[in-house]
Image 1: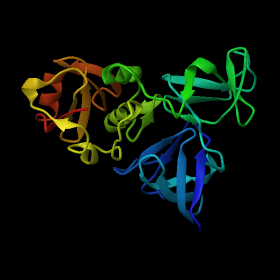
Image 2: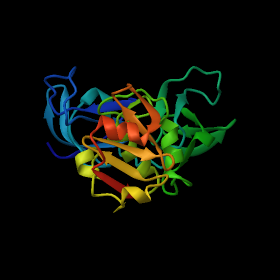
Image 3: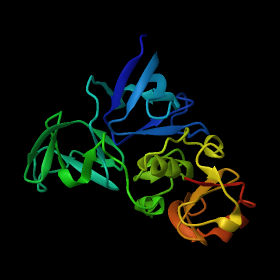
Image 4: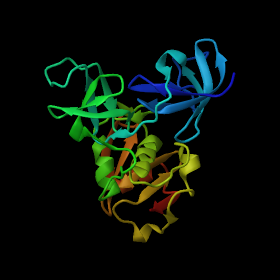
Length: 252
C-alpha cells in the first residue's frame, strides 16, 4: 500500500501496539485527537498500521476512525473541550465533542458567533484559533491547569482522559515547543534545560521513574496519576515519596 494521510473523525482514536488485544492497553499505546493526521503504511484487517504525523508515534488504528482527506487543517481548538454542531446555534444538538488541540478545517464563514467547517458543520468561533498563529501565552502551568480533574487514562492525550506524559506533551506543544513522543523515557533529558532541585520554580517539568508532572509553584505539582485516577495538584514531596525521588527536572 502506498502511504496515505488519513484524518481522525472521532473525538480520539487509540494507537494500539497489539491490535489483537484491543481491550488491553499496552505500554506502547497512544492516542490521536480529532482532526490529526495518521500516515498509513499498511493494512491489517480492521486496522491500518502507520504513525501519527504530529509526533511519529507508531501503531495500529481502527480504519473506521479515519477518513481520506486532502485538506490541511487550518484551525485548532484552544479551550479544554468544545462541541461541533449541525447548525450555527447552541440549541442544535451537538454532533461530537472535541478536545483541546484538536485540528479542524474552516471555510472562513461565520454566522451567529459560529464558524463553519469544511463538512458543513459549525463550531463556536471563540473556541478556536488559526493553526498558523496558535501559541498559548502565559505560563505553561496555567495551560496545564486546563486538565485539572481530567480522568486519568493510560495512553490518553485529551481532556476526556489523559496520562502523565500525554499531559506534558500537550502543554509543551501548545506553547510552541517541539516534544518527543509522549513517553516519559523519550521526553526525559530531551526537552528544555536541566536544572537543580534547589532552583525549582513554577512551570518546571519534573520527572520521576516512569512519571512526570509540572510545577504550579515551588512546592506543588500538577500531574495525571493512576494513584488517584485523575489529574490533580499535590505537594512535590508526596510524589518524591511515591516514586522514590526525582530523576530529572527540565525548564523550557
